[in-house]
Image 1: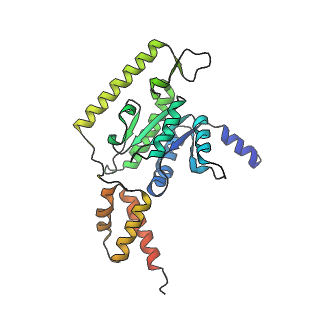
Image 2 (image 1 turned 135 degrees about the vertical axis):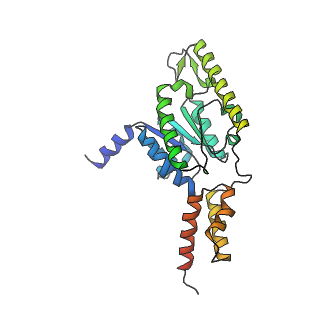
Image 3 (image 1 turned 180 degrees about the horizontal axis):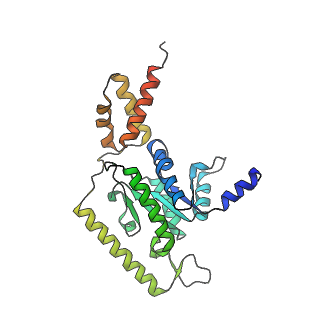
Length: 254
């Protein structure tokens, strides 16, 4: 099979479009958790930075949004670009699953949708999240209407996006409202603390480097205690600190 034909075959496979921030530990989440979970559910995976070509990125995002089977949106940190891309998906009634470290990052109007919360302090949290994502994708594909906001459902049109009867639409709205209330009650009873101040991966990496340059023998546990409360996961901090320390040690003095 030629490379061109192989590419066409891959493009035909149904895929999940992951919308999330880029860089640092978010790339780690995508490569080590999201991609394997999506594959386990039987779908291909794509992200906007998979496309390397000189075009406006919003065109690529719109293409993936229209062509994907469903979107997987990580709203951790309330990233405005992610919210914008999720809005595009909702406008065409695309199936969606939301991921977050804290329910506080989810706008209230979206809390009726399927939401997966993760806790980086939990043992083996990456494997737990991976299992939840796979399970959610399979469940959404089996009952797709529950993964769409009722406001974007069309009622018995000639060529519907997602078509339901008026009665079914009301039932879906009621079901989602009940799910949202249950989620709110759980959140109130057992609130999951999120960082008071969250930083992006580039800022976190800069802070780690500053700490190491100021104190070359700084213990790793001190770096973790400084950076982890700001959002980055511990395993990423450890790996990044070791890479930076090695790079600094190999620098040639002038």
